[in-house]
Image (cartoon, rainbow, N blue to C red):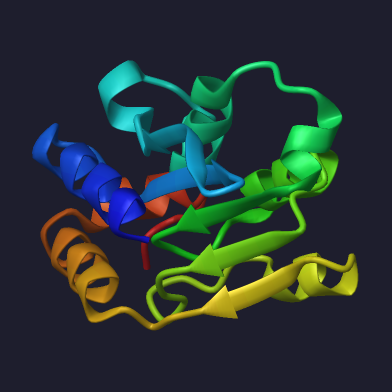
Length: 144
């Protein structure tokens, strides 16, 4: 999780949304990334998607033996990628700021562990307080 937090902090330092993710295969990080939607003007570059992109093409078995760590509960898009590539376990830094598709993942056999890590919570709460419009854009919502 520390590597995912480092990624989230990097994203925040770049002016982006502080969500980070890493994909670990047999104890080795094979893909790491952070939310780059703002930095790249992307509609899909969430932290998990960035980690998948940076992991690159891998044999299916590699993903089926990997663990994905993410600082924030994964949205529907990222959860779809997790299911598509057969990631069996996801470790979530926190889900109080945003509850993603954890139940959907569990219903499809993915082991989901939530840490409620205070660093992850602080990163998101601080960002949202300063940038509510960017946060709502990122999760596809219209601000109240």
